[in-house]
Amino acid sequence: MKRLDLIRQIEQSGCVFVRHGGRHDWYENPRTGACQPVPRHREVHEHLVRHILKKLKD
Image (tube, rainbow, N blue to C red):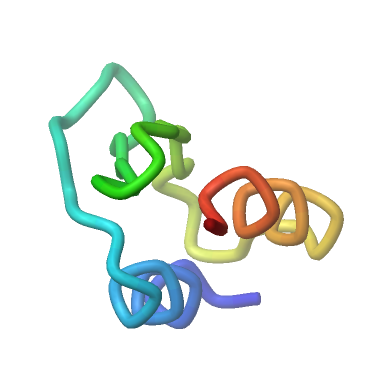
């Protein structure tokens, strides 16, 4: 999946950008307090996409 598509899905689910890391950007779900790093690669593996979205869900 393209990184920009993943970020679009994350932000549509109500998550917000927190900070830039070394090689990742951090997003947080303000309702649950869950944070997850999102790599800055153009393509993100589907397994990792599912993991990130699962952790950031309500």
